[in-house]
Length: 301
Length: 255
Ligand SMILES: Cc1cc2nc3c(=O)[nH]c(=O)nc-3n(C[C@H](O)[C@H](O)[C@H](O)COP(=O)(O)OP(=O)(O)OC[C@H]3O[C@@H](n4cnc5c(N)ncnc54)[C@H](O)[C@@H]3O)c2cc1C
Ligand SMILES: Cc1cc2nc3c(=O)[nH]c(=O)nc-3n(C[C@H](O)[C@H](O)[C@H](O)COP(=O)(O)O)c2cc1C
Ligand code: FES
Image (cartoon, rainbow over all chains, first blue to last red; front, side, top):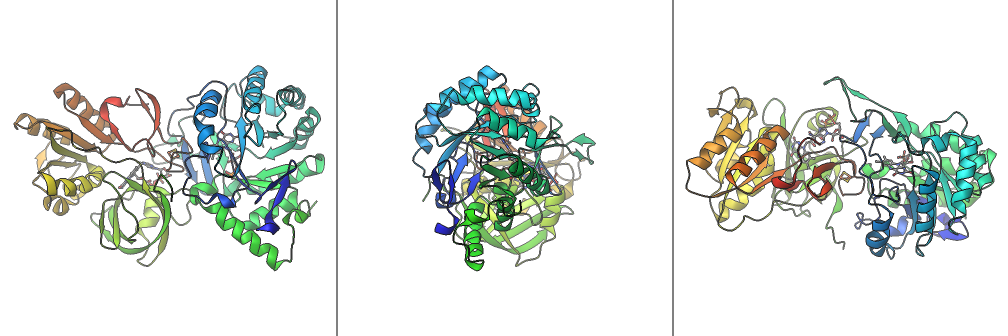
């Protein structure tokens, strides 16, 4: 597997593949998956207080992807630390704690609590979820607010801080740059794209909310573009995601500038997808005489 | 191995048969999956981003059976697949129907396509005791698996339009059955949500235990994505992991 190792924050990830926030729960449900093939995983978005999320139906399928409106339901940081961490700390993959808040203070509290958990590898700050009326959306849209939020949150812990951006803004590189200036250690993107669908049999929206977040194959070109633009704008590492299903997709994201990638919706199609992709990536490296997959990062820039 | 007992399998389609104009019985070749009554699988649909959940109806030698109603794109695609096609399926998923409480006789109450969920229970109880089986549908053509159920126990049927069995709904028929019998029943129900809610209400009035198998739209099927929640007295629960079978008393209907 050595060719497909990548480095992130002075650590080595066995593979560049990271199940994305929201599809992997807290890491304890996929006990039947071979963890050897995960570089890390990102937890469901966590908040200081537990949260109930949106009414059902919360998920729907479209021609080229998935719509969801889970609404950041989560057990809360206290329960995560006390009940989930003991179950997942020894699983093997590095753990990235994804978190969010409704106010700057909530973000800071969350980062402080999670930052104190020794076994966590990094924190991923979601400033982009389009589902919540009062949530991250305003933070993720304004470079000034992002810079301030990032610098305040960064002060709360020593862990590497990944800022996860929304594609639902007109100028992604400007937001990324602001996060970098605020002290972010990496940028991850993209979160889901605002979308909706209507069930024409009933004439009703497919989701209860009725607008949700679009993910999966259909958003890949948007995500590749976002990674590419961001890579041109910042020096910190980028973790790319959005519609990754195959090793070729991973290579494309890395060439656009991603140092590692996250796999979201594809897990629903195949929970063992990281194993398949990792094996195909190894073959890709062999066939193309690549000794170190990281050498392709930013090749298209 | 893992605690959950879940794994992702491959299975070739052995046969596809229409039981009515829109209900399909599909046998899948797989002898490695074991399941308990009430458990389900998530099956891949070619061209679809999400797998589809179906109850595991029975297992015979090397084959596993699902029975489904053609509703939308996914079930339409599945119904058109040919024997030999290979699909991935995640199984076995979810909890299962709880054991019969002591001193009670089982009453299996099915509505529409929901009856398929009860066949494994009917088979189980046919070995142990005799279950009362009540099956309802909108019309005669939608009453399915009657022969399979008859092999297990005596069945009572009803339809909304009276084209087969009694002309009434299945909960009414169950109520009559319970009133005309000396036994104390535990009700196991699966069907459309309004029917389950009515069954829950009836059981509450008659002070009988009632277990319902619920449906909700799913992403992962294993408890990770919290897409499939139902509101209960203890807060939100996941149909795929904490269910699909719930004690009816727990459920807060119409979330
Ligand atoms: C645990 C469980 C067991 C089930 N067992 C059976 C069974 O044995 N036989 C059977 O006929 N049906 C069963 N269903 C319902 C079945 O899963 C849906 O009818 C099917 O997913 C519809 O897919 P579609 O693509 O045809 O419909 P579409 O409406 O095109 O589907 C769009 C999306 O919504 C989901 N969806 C639509 N209706 C339902 C529903 N009622 N429940 C859950 N998800 C839905 C689909 O899975 C898909 O993700 C079960 C559902 C659950 C949750
Ligand atoms: C069901 C679901 C739940 C999600 N929950 C979260 C979340 O809690 N926090 C977050 O930052 N992103 C969340 N996401 C977004 C994903 O992490 C990812 O950014 C997005 O789905 C794009 O990747 P994909 O196309 O590979 O799915 C969620 C996505 C899905 C499909
Ligand atoms: S479908 Fe993912 S939690 Fe139930």
